[in-house]
Image 1 (cartoon, rainbow, N blue to C red):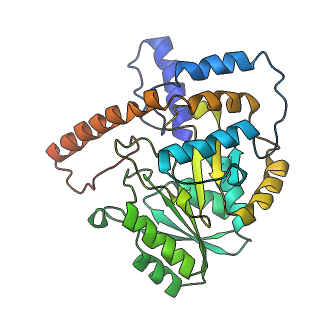
Image 2 (image 1 turned 30 degrees about the vertical axis):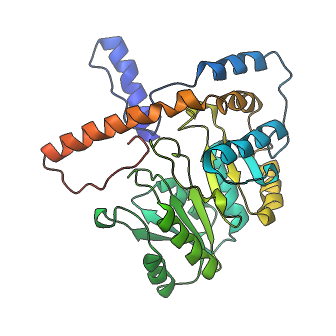
Length: 306
């Protein structure tokens, strides 16, 4: 975000001096905007009273999200295990705070999204970083978690992303099942960030199939609604009330107008699915150019748009 601010200052300089424009590759944001039906819904929403919603989000949106998972992932996530959040970032704060006490330990994988570590450490949670490399396709394994357990206190949670930021690699059925089984056997909670689901041209297995797993989702990436700051969690039943209480105190409730718009976004999946093919074409172009430039230590990227 520091680079985002610097790039915008450069934008202003270029506009005033005629200097070369900035090509914005500095943040994980789709080039497309939200579907027109989303904007129409937001315009109509401005004519209604937009006050606080329930801390968990509106009933209509939570039910629509549950339906989205049934259609897209063939998983049965009841609406009463869905929490609408102020973006996936707030979702991570709520999940980590509800799951861990200060001093407990979680595992994250690198290269990966640095805010997992930073958020956990801000909450007083100890973080064990586990290095991945292209030889494994940047896919985490139970063997690496065994080593982490042998080198320190027990792990309270294991945080993974599929597809990953920044590698774009995704967990297949076997890898996802193996990580879930390890967490189940070691009394740890699997936390899966699935905000880049939908950016791949093929369906990916979703951890929402597991009732004891936390899944982080967002309207930012697939739905092209980054600035609307809206996401959601699917939670084990036992964490619903703690997360609700935390949201009441930290954020009160998710953004009301964004929830109105998100309802429309959930019905625009045909348009949104088409973006995955442009991302795939971009990945192929970049991968070929890198190999021609001699950069060969590249694992296949299955999704995202980095």
